[in-house]
Every structure is written in structure tokens, then in C-alpha cells.
Length: 345
Ligand SMILES: [Zn+2]
Image 1 (cartoon, rainbow, N blue to C red):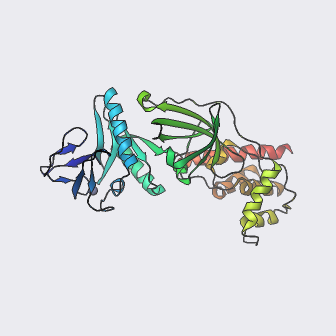
Image 2 (cartoon, helix red, strand yellow):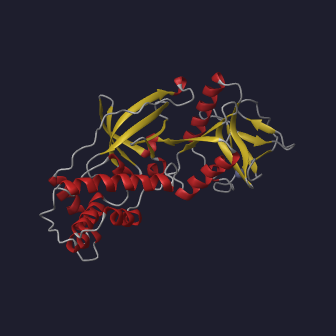
Image 3 (cartoon, rainbow, N blue to C red):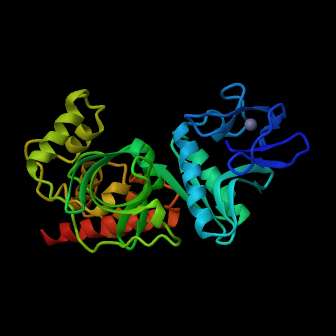
């Protein structure tokens, strides 16, 4: 942390003022006494005397990456905007929250996220900003949460951590997320499509913006391309093999669903396994829900009945950007599209 209170309660910013030796400094959140760490190799900063002792989550144990990113963003924005606050403390109801960076003129705050926190903590913090009337941009650490396998022609093959699902965004039929690549000091925007049936694997169009060129608003553009890969029978067989490897009993959900639908595992209809970009937002495996719709359709259930059932059957990722209304729309879109395919055969 860079901001502390002195014994008189004044705010001290280590990046702006030289800190006096012998003075005592306090955490703005938990009010505990802090250590001043003046470094040659590391950026000077404040830290709690005991790890995990702070009442504020981000200050429990702060990584050097977090410190470095905050400084880089602060230095960058100060060159462009007149009023930039570092570790800005604000009130959301009765709680104190701290924005890594707050641009006063734009009323926009940044949260750089490197440690894994729970979905409820992410939501709670997001709501705090809403209550305070501050626009928030979450920047997740891409070096930590995204692995790129291949990259050419601006197309990347990636795998992302489950944590990223909290930040998957959906707009005009496009699925995307963005974050900060600390190693290359750039913001990266990934528009993604499912990569066959591999969980949290995606084909992505990647756009980057160097921190030094970063201005608001973010203006990444959606691509109209469709990079969805077709699912062929061998992918289905591999997928099922993995699903059935550890549990071949009737308790296995996939197995029992196929059994109840009277579908032989070596003779799965071509109609099961039709991919959509929205699959990335659905936790329920494509096989499960499509087999279920297929079964209900064969039983002459109406579209309305099927849709109603699927609202509770299909589980979507728990992203801060997906309201219940948007989730319902996604389910409707997928079921409708699939139902039309079923009618065609
Ligand atoms: Zn503290």
C-alpha cells in the first residue's frame, strides 16, 4: 500500500512525499500501525506488521505485482488527467472500500485483481462501487489467469482459469473479457468462442493496448467473425470417455441421462452436440442440456414446456456482468436455436 495516515490523521502518499523516519503511520482501513518499507530494489511502500492482520482483504498480503501495477497506472493517468487518486478510500453504506486507482474527473475506478477471491466477495465489492455511484473497471491479472497456447493472425488459443468466469461479459451475441498483462504492460481484450468441448478453452481474437496509449473510454471493437469450431464425433467420444472414466454407475449423470433417453453411447444422434458461442457461459455440459431437450422433444413436449424446464435445468456462470434477466435471455436463445434444429430433422 502507498497511502497511510500520519499521527495527525493526514493522508500520506509515499509516491508523492518523502516519508519521515521516526514517524508513525497507520492503515486507513484498520487503523493499525504500519511498517514503512523503503527499498532500493522494490518500490517503497507501507505494509502491515503482521500478515493477514488487516480488516481489508486486499491489504492482508499485498503482492509486488499489485504494488507495481498500481504505480504504473497512477503514473500513467497522472500524465493525462488532472485529478487522480491512488488507493482512494470511499464509503459504501457503512463499509470502507479502497479503489486501487480513482479518476476523479471521469468518476471511474480501477481494481486490479490478482488474488483469487470468492464470487460473493467480487459481487459485494462491485455493489459497493454502485452504491457509491462510481463506475468500476475490474482488471484481472492475465499473466496469472490466462494461458496462451498458440497465437497467429491475431487469433489466440487460450485456456482460462475458473476465476475468469466471474468476469465473462456478453454483449450483442459476443462473449469477451479483458484484463491487464503486467509482463508486457498492456491491456488485453479477448473476444472468445468455445474450442470444441474443452472446458474453459477458447479460440480468441486478441486486441492489445499498451498502457502508455490507454485512454478512456476503452474502445476495443467486436469482431463479426465466427470462430466457433465444429464438434465432430471423435470429440464427443473423447468427452464421454473422460466423463465416464471415474464413474460408470447409474449415479453418473451423463450415463443415466443417456440411459433414460434410450440413447446408446456408441450411437449418439448427430443432433446432439451443436455448438454456440454462448456455451462458454453455460456450466451445464452441452451434452446434458441438449440430450434433455432432445428427449423432451421426442416426448412431444411443447417448446414452452421445454423452455420453462430449461430455465432451472441449465446453470450459467456466475459473472458480475450477467444479470438474471440476461441469463434468462441466453437460455432462451440457446434453447430456441436448438429447438429449431430439432424441428428440421
Ligand atoms: Zn489495515
